[in-house]
Image 1 (cartoon, rainbow, N blue to C red):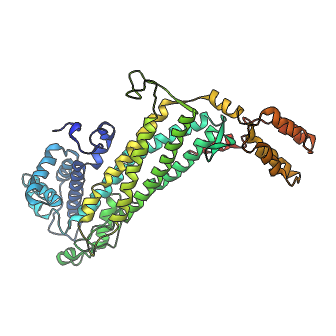
Image 2: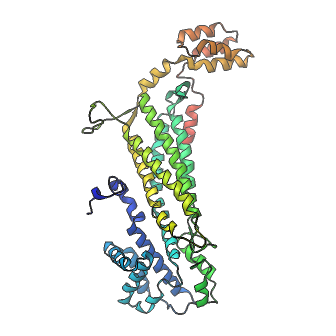
Length: 457
């Protein structure tokens, strides 16, 4: 049964079309390929070390053969590894045996016994996972994050000067601009994305208990920590010099927390967008053939932001557990991290689905400028802040109280507010400035702030 309809997880079922780009990095197939890559790179590194004499130098054709084994990895190769694993009940050992079988029919048959030399399983696993998570983030997740930011930056510029009634505690408040409110999320998301992009991916290669025991008994004269450091760095990873049998996974906890922060900011954005749609700030474009409700024909539901909210929640709950679990291991190791880490890619994928959902939701919305103008014109009481602040400037001691008595819980018209301003004992220039003020023009530096964030991209 290969149909996505038979998948248990929606990641590989309902959302399989969206998550397909991550399959090359986060699937079990991908893990096999990355393990194969690490094993063969280690064999090649052994052949290049002058003091390791039992693995001879390889010809260029033999080096190409090893590279092709990785680049040509396909479903047939994965199936063979899986068949070996069914016998060995050990996934890493299955990759080793697969390589040895492949080398038997080549000019490298004489070095096949050196595959996995001095390695423990996590020497292979920790590097494979680090590379695959790094590649998945850089090739798929991070570009999606930048694409989302690009759309939000564009929306910020388009609406930087568009006045909007703000709402604090859900109530009418000092006006802002739509662009400034979007810019807040641009700044927050951009900051978290930078933290994600600066994340180090660590790796170790030091044997069964992290002390190079097998390495040293075979070649005591070799600088194994130095050799290991160069090997890990050659894979584009940061070297972890001190571990137990397993790499400590602290960097995976760090990445999980960074992604959780990004997810949380994006979830906050989704809830605000849902609310703006509820208030009529945004209208959703309809699409022919789509249905909003199975019984209410008029419905156009904000399903993309709701979908994103759900996937962000699942991603964060998974990351929270993984960040706590993966950094803890009994003594030199226990196997619980092995099962847990297999779900790390699932957490990344739920976050990625949310990124796509938000982008899709943003494509469907359009600003209702008439509604924004009506909302502002219907709430003259929000200028109470402006008036009482000017009165404070002229040492009117009960300025706040005067405006509170006039406006709190009351509907104030333009005429009513202007009548109040006319009787104030303040300079004529200030009085004239307040009389010209409207809710739509009382936006402070909102436009400039919005544009400054957009220009900082």
